[in-house]
Image 1 (spheres, protein in one colour):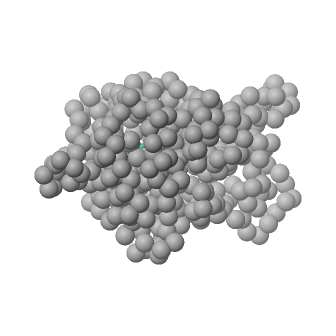
Image 2 (image 1 turned 90 degrees about the vertical axis):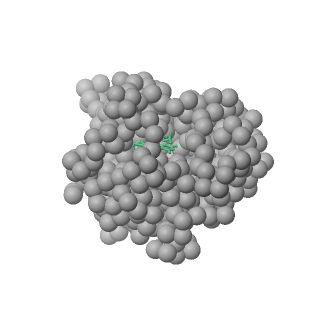
Length: 370
Ligand SMILES: Cc1cc2nc3c(=O)[nH]c(=O)nc-3n(C[C@H](O)[C@H](O)[C@H](O)COP(=O)(O)O)c2cc1C
Ligand SMILES: CC(C)CC(=O)C(=O)O
């Protein structure tokens, strides 16, 4: 295993094709799935020379939480679909690599147990964030927030791009519409008006509005990030509503098909928030060079979704750790080759659109030659 692509190939060879499709797939024609990766290939790095430093500092601090690398584990559901220990394996690997994990609300292990597993490996300094789908029943939502808070999660990542479930036609064709027997969204176990042992289904909330974000802001003192805001105007509104950070994400192309690649949106989003809150970008990040491009164009960190699922499927905990070590090494190597000694050295003039030489000189603003 030398890179993310190797894990993808190995996972496809190991997994039930129905689950391999669930992971790889996206909404409708998967135009956005492909666009995310293509956007990274469409940019070139223009390195600086003779600025060497013996070591590079890859550490990042986000909303008070320190991580050894600016590559987060984006929230992904149902890890027990691909490995018996499920999210316990992921959390141990992330803790060992010093990476920040965002636990999905749809985890197949309860968030408290995930946190215990992470701390058993990484000690009390390990940070975990919790991804939340605000439920139509706000008492249920409050109970979920309490569970995440009690587990020691230090931020809430509210996914706002899913008023309805994305239409994954691979899942429909494969007849995948439920978890296999014995797997549950454990964070929803025993929540109100269910008999003991009952696990609620996650509900999507088409009525979700800024009032819900205001309500959540009043309900918790944890930092709140919004995941899935795509329009710069919504980014400005997020700042106005007291949101602490954004995850610039199109859900890996799994919600509205044909939305832009997240990398294409990054310069406008960075301009809209103007450094007031951090932006984490996910979607199509597969290489250290991708991380450098995103950070150069204004992200504070990136997230990876599918690569973690592929590594889990390939070899569980040790493979996720290996994946994170590979990406750490790729990023370090890329920084050295770019003449950067740390993440702060990554600035927009390191990036050019492909074909820029033909159009004459210019700096890149995320694909826009100026
Ligand atoms: C199998 C799978 C499950 C996911 N589950 C969730 C989830 O529970 N909550 C969420 O907010 N996003 C979820 N996502 C989206 C990821 O958080 C992330 O935005 C996306 O995977 C990033 O793109 P990438 O897979 O190209 O790295 C999921 C993605 C995948 C592939
Ligand atoms: C709907 C969730 C349970 C999972 C999810 O967000 C996804 O599969 O993209």
